[in-house]
Every structure is written in C-alpha cells, then in structure tokens.
Length: 345
View (tube, rainbow, N blue to C red):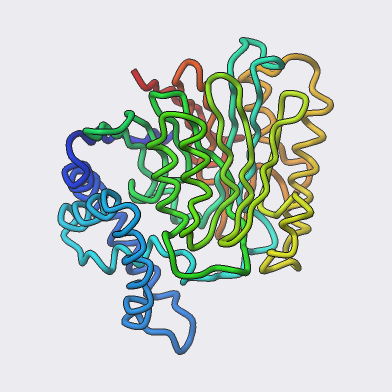
C-alpha cells in the first residue's frame, strides 16, 4: 500500500509555489529530464523554450498569480523557471495517444446517490513511472478558497476540489486547433480558485485559452457539467438522469471535428460505453463502494477502465464526496490498492 504524504502549502502565491517546489523538487527535475529525453527528432530544448514565450506572455497578462506560483516553485526546487514553464505547455508537446489507457470519470448528482451527496470517481492513467511523482497538496493561498489537489510534481494538477464546494476532474482530449495562449494545465488551476459555478465555467472558457481538456466541473448543490473544449470552441454536456461519465474523446457531435487523432478514439469510446453501461445497470442508489467497483472494472480489457498496460497504467484512482469535502485516494491500480481518506477541514 502506498500513501501520498500531504503537502500543506500556505501563504502568498509565490510562497505557496516555493513550498511545493521544495517538496517536489525531485519530481519536477525528473519531469524536465524525461521531457528533454523524449523530444521528437529535430526539436531541441532551446526550441521549446523559445516557443513557450508567447504562452508565458499570455499567462502573465491573464493570470500573473499563476506565474508567481511557478516562479516560486522554480526557486524552491532550484531549477530554471522557463524550463519548468515548458512543462505547463502541453500544447507544444503533442504525443499521439496510445491505443489503450488514459482516464475515465464518473459523476453522480444527489438525487441518485445513496447519501444525497455529489459523488465523483476518477481514474488517471499515465506512464507507470509517473506514480512516484504524484503529490497530494492542500493549498491555502491568501486570497482564494483553500483546495486539495492531486497531480504530478504538485504543480501539474489532475483533479481537485475547494472549500467553496467546487470540484474539477476530467479528461485529456486532443484538439486540432491549439494556438498560443494560456495553457490548459494552468486553466485547471484557475478553475480551482473559483467560488461559484459561474466563475469556474468562465475560467474553463476563457477566450485566450491555448487549448482545453474536457473539464468536468461539479458543485456541492448538484450542478454537474462536462465542458468539452478546444482552443476555439466548446460544448456543455450536463449530467442527465443524475449522472454523467466521460473518457478521452469528444462526445458532443459539435466537437468531433476537432479530434486530432480520430484513429485512436475507439479505445476511448469503448471505456465510455462501458462506463455508461455500468451506470445504466446499477442496482440502486449509487454508493462509494459501487463507484470503487466501477473504477476497478476490467471487463473490456485491454481497453479497460482500470488499466494495466505495457509501460502505462492507472497511477491513481480517486473518489470525491463533494459535500463532505472528502477525497479517498488509491495510488496505483484501484483493483490492487487501498483507498486512503483525506478531508479538507
């Protein structure tokens, strides 16, 4: 059993970044080195640093406090700031998705959950080596709601929820209209600073975004929506009949023309269809245990929700009870791991 230590970061944006950088220095250094070693032929690290500059300029204009967090993290980790910022610009690091494995989400509204709460389940599939670099961080920044997040190197957030009752999970998609702007990885950070659904949605859809994920935004009062975005377009897919699921392709017909790698969508479609099947055939009100079972599902191997691949795997699984501000986190494949509880007091 692996349990992530909780990093508590408190203070100004720069101070919080410095604390996270110091705590996650090895992971951040390793991420930079791994990225440098995996560059396509003909692309140099100096090329990427130069290409990052328009993204940095857009972020400095729109979210200077996020830049302050990265500057603090670079100082705390003892690494070059621009090297660190390159990692935030996924838009410059296109890697075609593998045929199997990525991530899968479930979201449940109060009317169909056993305890009347908003429940979310998320599996995150990455390279197996990323498991060692995961961090659980509780952020207490001077002017924003406290929140807890899980992600690589502390700064690169996959999921989280805040004290205002806003959660962010979701899925990587591969839009074909990327452009210089605020990187989608940093928009995730802005969403978790929101105090209302309207603020969260505005962050997800900021017009100067470089790209987008499918951002699954939920609020404690039961508002649940998939924000399927690209750089220039979006579709909102709300929960229907009290639930929604999502994987790594565009579900909305409007957004399907933005698929960068349509040849790989069948693997994501299979997981999506299986997740829908599980929800439609559920035996009754949705419980925590039910979602745990769904996240550990292997029935569609090798394209299963709980993914065991060659060099890739489910590196963490998370259950969120948004009303209780509770996260149950399993590091590694959920079929083999124990969920450990964390609560945002």
